[in-house]
Amino acid sequence: MHILATPEFWVAASFFLFLAALVYFGLHKKLATALDARAAVIAKELEDARRLKEEAEKVLADYRRRQSEAVDEAKDIVALAAKEAAGFAEETRRSMKEQFERRMRLAEEKIGRAEEDAVREVRSAAVDAAVAAAEGLISRKLTPDLAKKLVADGIDSVKTKLN
Image 1 (tube, helix red, strand yellow):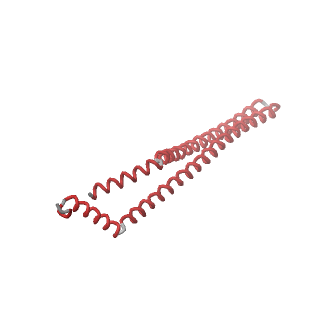
Image 2 (cartoon, one colour):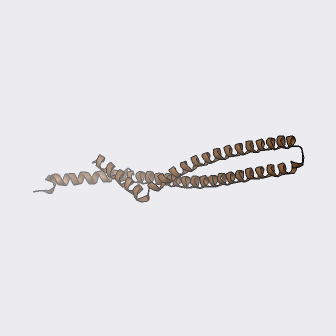
Image 3 (tube, one colour):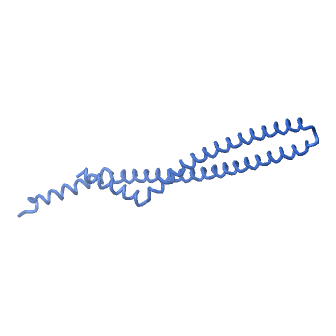
């Protein structure tokens, strides 16, 4: 039996001709370039996510510091009002009561505004931290092994579709 008459020979010849055509048209280079570009994009996204997480942590720490300062300031305001109230003890009962009530009302309003500002800032920081945590979680889930597996699965899928 002559080798040119067997179907296996023609299947092998067709396969090698197909591979030669792919190499001739540079498909392997295009595929490698596309994979390299995708890897660069993923690396950039990971770096951006890390940077955003660090920024969110800094903002959160800043807001916590501000909240602490607001509480300290509120305590100082209350203490100042109490000292001033004691200093005016010699005045008449009516003027002392009016002045004390006025200062306490101002202090409570300022404390209320400071608490509202602190709560608003903490909520904003919590949202930023949640976004950063979500990005970090996504970036941690996409491990290099998983990325390689996805690329390999894609290549295998292309191979099966081309056959």
